[in-house]
Image 1: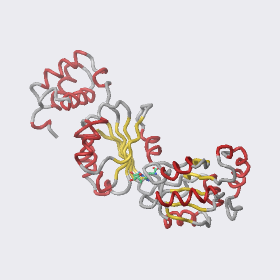
Image 2: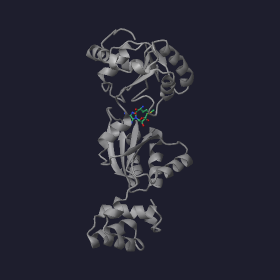
Image 3: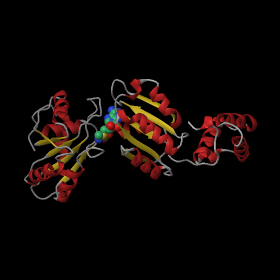
Image 4: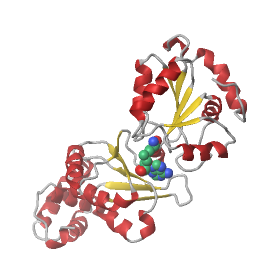
Length: 319
Ligand code: SAM
């Protein structure tokens, strides 16, 4: 590793104090290290002191997009040697980089945003380095899914990070069908030009009653988080073109038993009777008036019954 050649400051000193107790025992003798360094997902200040110190001192930084990383490094006053490692050259580049680390080089791996190897290149390099006995050290920091979850307010202890769904509608639908009964919160990444069709597919397969949190442009100027039910999400996005711009994390509540469990038996019975005769919204409203149960819960239950095919629904319920 290079001697500190810039503003690593206290972070760099802290890092060098920590290193003797680090990962040396796992590594081949004389080998360098691979540091997997998380970088910001928008706000350039969202990077740890330790990450900056590592970037300043690495012999080489392997970056998904060298121009993008050069911008981040310039912002923090770091000069470093960069090499590109992206999905198209990772296999060949991994072999070269492992050889360099085996010869003693310390390499920092970064992606365009957030944590490398999480819906990003890097996993192959990490696997090759580990297989070669080179110590791999995570330098944790920003990740879009965790940032979104932390502010989503879905009070569920477990989640499934899925990342990007398949692009083709049939494959996406098949994948969502596999996830439909999953009882945990689901976390997706989505591109702006596909976000509308993605929420439509989520509603169609998972049912309109689930809650979705649409987290957009986190840590950036136009950051927004919007919560609604899945059957409202497409219309909400369509109502303003700006709502479809930028980067998205979509968080969807898991398959739930609460609606059924929370509903008193009498409310369930009345709701089912009314659903046989009336449009969904009217049935839920009347059932609430008759039984005193909460209208929202009755509505959610009615949607779930419709989606489960337990009643045919009227023309106005098909949306
Ligand atoms: N490795 C990154 C991480 O740790 O989160 C994810 C990289 S993945 C190629 C990029 C996707 O992450 C975007 O399409 C979007 O779904 C999500 N994402 C990245 N930055 C975001 C942000 N600032 N706000 C919302 N979503 C973001």
